[in-house]
Structures are given as structure tokens and as C-alpha cells.
Amino acid sequence: MLQLVLVIAIAFVLQALLSGIQMKHFSDEFVKLRRQGKVAVGRKAGGFHAGAIVMFLIDDKGKIRKGKKLEGVTFLARVKDFPGFEGRYVGDLKKEDGPRNHKNLGLAMEDAALTYRKFTRGEVIPDPPSPFQKVGIAARNLFGRRSAA
Image (tube, rainbow, N blue to C red; front, side, top):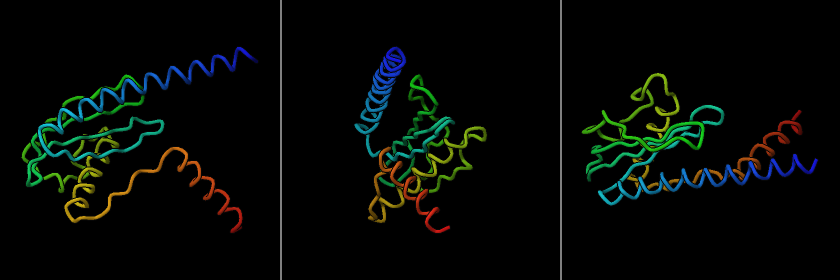
């Protein structure tokens, strides 16, 4: 029993360390883009599928100058160039504009467009829920359904 707890603890620490390294890499890439100008970011969590984050360097009119993406299931995913959108208006991106076989990448692009449009209209952009908030929401939904039955 003690060995099982030890293995789980080591796996947890290792996962946290490797995720931290991945986030440092993402942060460094974001800062590089940010130093060049404004950046529109979109994200879509993947769960058991590949999640995706897109970053578009944009000019003052919202035209894309450069694209970057991070997609994958594991900590091995790295930020890569995401060409093919240069000159397009970021607010017009749709999920259909993304690669056909990467649904979450298209949804992240759509999120970047929505976030940009909200920002330009002066709307508040809500923070995504934390993992603890997601658990609370799921618990409320679960118990809410039972009490209604």
C-alpha cells in the first residue's frame, strides 16, 4: 500500500514538473510574440483529445502577421509556427478555417476571434474556470439534477 502511494506521489510530482516546463516554453513563445506587437490568443481544452492554443500576432487593424500553435495531449507538445493566415482579419476566423482533422485547433481559432471581437467592443473577457471551479460546477450540476427528479 505504501509503495502504491509513493508511486502515485512521484507520478504527480513528475507530471507537475513536466507541465511546468511546457508552460515555461509557451510563456517564452508568447513573450517573443508580444514584444513584436498585439497578440490574440484562443484556447480549447482537450480532455482525452488533443487540446489546442493558438496565438496570432496582429497589427493595429486586426490583420494577422504571424501565427503560432500549441496542440497535443502530453507535456511533449511544443509551440510551432501556424502559417497560412497572414493578412486575414483575426475577428473573422471560424472553426472551419482550421485543419479538418484537428477540431480543437479550429475551436481555439474561433475562440481567438471571439476574444478579439469582445476586446475591441470593450467587453469584459471572463477568466476560464480553474480546475477546482470546474469540480464545483460539476457537483452543482450533479446535485441539481437529483433534487429536480
